[in-house]
Image 1 (tube, rainbow, N blue to C red):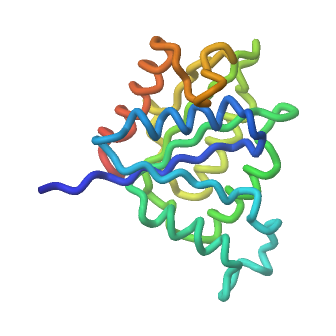
Image 2 (image 1 turned 45 degrees about the vertical axis):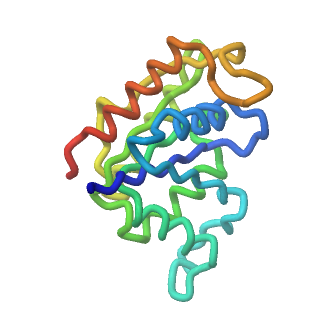
Length: 182
């Protein structure tokens, strides 16, 4: 029996009613039976990145983050854009991955859920740049713009329920899971 791959899911938003977090919850549901979804929810607990602190013993939440990354077969991110760039808390998370080797050669993709006219292009260009510094294996076909309007999310469940949007999200996650490792 073959074990299921582990897919780490990360929302780049701390906002409770975040569209990006709704996408991450939906992705966890969509991969059931095809992958083991692990959602990282400790971004708000990470200390501010300081290179002086990127030594043993690492802060506990950094150890947890890096352990989850190391155990993942692939990582899928959904992050908003804030002021034309990555949100500070999410950039902080990424900064903690630069000093470790856990993300090196790890398959990574992202979903840009923005419905804004610019499509959050600044944040996703910055994400590609930072992931390049970490040595992550960006799967270009799994770095996709899938606009998710607020009315595509069921307020009760917090999941994306619009079928064409769900199909598009499922396509991105399938592409990432089926991509060849680096």
